[in-house]
Image (cartoon, rainbow, N blue to C red):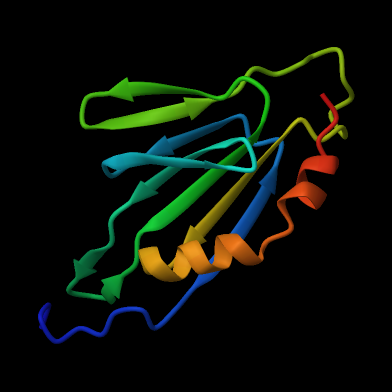
Length: 121
């Protein structure tokens, strides 16, 4: 089943604001920065229930993101500026679930400067 499972059949993009930590539940590799933000990529995996699931590319925008290793996994965290209103965007995380090559193509199509202008810290 795994050998015959189709790849690259779906792509999804998720964007969150004021997400100050992200826990990776599978190993990730750091990639080249995008728009000055940290980038990590997880590999896809086969699930007997759902077929092939593509990996994620994570782009972290905002100040002071730090990766902390936790065994085989890790966490990326950003500092919170408590002097700002809760409604002020301090960070953004963009998750792209897609084949690695497709994720790179989608990254090229996102207006990163426009997203960064929303961040006020």
